[in-house]
Length: 547
Image (cartoon, rainbow, N blue to C red; front, side, top):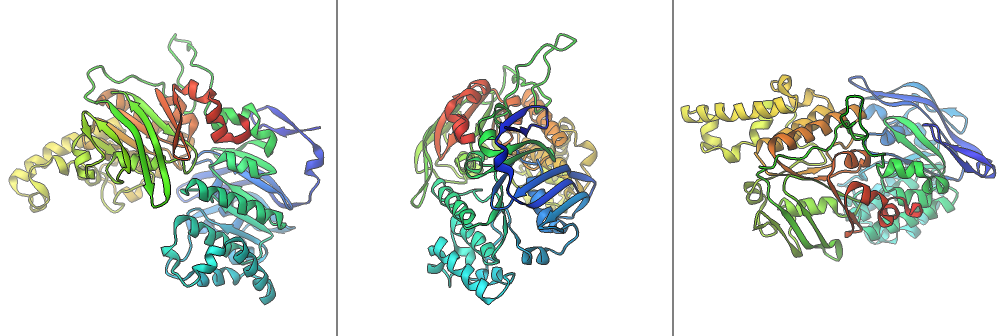
């Protein structure tokens, strides 16, 4: 017996016979930085065995996608560079190599978000992938296999790729990569945003591709799916390898369970007698003021269908006034769909959502906002060329009597009203530590600061219920801690209820009062963070066999 390495000190047993395959891809002490000095990878080492599936796991901002970009040579498109370490593929160094040469050598990436050519047909997309094939015969063999794996693409071959469903686009993205006859296939979040049945099909396809002899490196938020498919796995945390070893052993280990479900020991008294902060956030959960203006949010038997796909099925939960309530679950669980119903973006098929006695499911977004419901989005939705101040003032327009025209003409009444609203905006900026950034264009700010600006804009609308969609997605550890402090401070001082959707479990478990868990559009658990972490159904949803 040997050991799988827990970088924090733990050791996991495994059979040495499993590691005798040839190493086809060898990454040693890799360091990657982005423009502005952000170091995304800090000494990552990884060995990929020929013919194996290697899963790369970790929370948002851990460095998973950065690792794949470094392997495929596409860092420059994101203003990233390899600043140290080595990448060797089949005996050849890849650092500084041209991305097209890397693809032709047999290392091919399927990027996150599909990235198909929407204006081209399915046929034209596949032909584009075939340009990296060795010869005509290789292209013909690859096309035959693609048609076998994805018959729907043959049926849609003359259709514009942008008109395909999300699942069909993911199939096309994988099929296009297979047209290059890869030796190693890099898959970045292939299940992201897909319906459960489509996720199952993608999982089966990855297994079939690997059975054909293709080595697979799989970056995936859906840890249960990834660990079930993989032979080997590594877990990244803040740009470093935290765990590595055989996937089956990691799936059953307490170390992965602790990291992936955010489990931490209870708070203990500090030297001064006070409680130490919750792990992962640097902020202990703080109760909202007793006179909070927030009302109870009651979601009852909420069902949402898109055609034949059920995104939510009879989901029920309650957010108590002034509480910090988290809504969690693997990719495709229905979390963002739920937020979109609560904010009026999606219509409910059945069920009800009541806030302060008002039914929300029949209201348009601006009517929902008028009831005191405000939200942020997973992808930053700010105007980059406009100052922080002006971005924040946008949230005040629904509260302004003068309107856009009078404000634009700078009429005296509008100027006086704008001054009053600017004062409120500056108070929110002070609360979130954004005072010095008010005059700067949003596009000049760091990613973490922009996320705080988006939170500030939501708060400037004077909400009593705040809906947060992935507030720390893509953040490094220090940025996540700053965001946690900002959310906790805003909740405590403004008396808000907060409904939080987030993948970073350490963040969630360190800040939430109560947690509701969805899986495949269904409610599977509800309780305190500690209760949810111990729930076998939750462990099964996140880690598969770990339950």
